[in-house]
Image 1: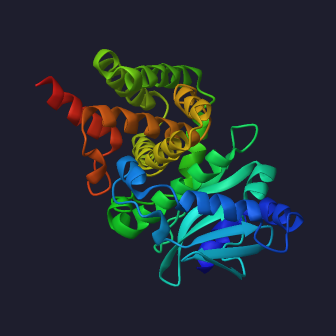
Image 2: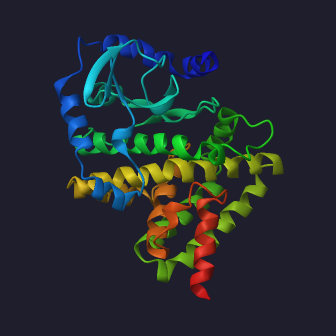
Length: 326
């Protein structure tokens, strides 16, 4: 836990200060109403989106300023914040996995959030990201709740597989710095843009565009050799695959919950964003969502195996695409 706090403090001191400015006396009514709305979404509806996910199995810790309210079995109680900064994540607290969410007011006001998945093994796969929408809708906030619920599910049932095969001397922050250098390499960035355009085309019509997308991704991966050494490439690909599997599937769930709640315009924005290049790790949230949508069209049971097999989302796409061609 001490290591957890040290790492979070190193990247979140600004959010700690911001949190102190947003303190309130109790859990805002808006947040309670949004939680209740999220928890009452039909179990059959969620089962169709992500089989086996049990939203209400995990206590929800909603932080407003420097106070935290834990909702468990429908009852909200207050406690001292567990995390040293405002974050949207899932984390074990006293051997029980909690979903952590900022209040909707705090999330909207801050605009920048620490989000990701953490584990009892203290694999800190988290980094700040910026909200891309001008304002946070109720549907998006509930969608993010389910995004983090899937992280809780991942830790609960698939922690060992998700954190195995980590490259030697792996440091996420160093690799994220490498990924950020891609933004300054014009030919490589151009290849990413081409790949993302074809990814969205494959999401819409895999029969006509999936082969082109697969070829473009393979070409872009090969191009990494022009700019990075083999050890760095291995780590970049590992992190890319990790984010697509863990975060891309959570973004896919988030978007589908938003659609279930009737906000088709926002869902369409999520879809459109698949093709837009974004700096840092956000691009992999989007590509992972795109791969999830393609897998929906290739096979009905991909979700039952995605977290229990070590293959990447892209390798899964390649495998199912080759089977379909036979």
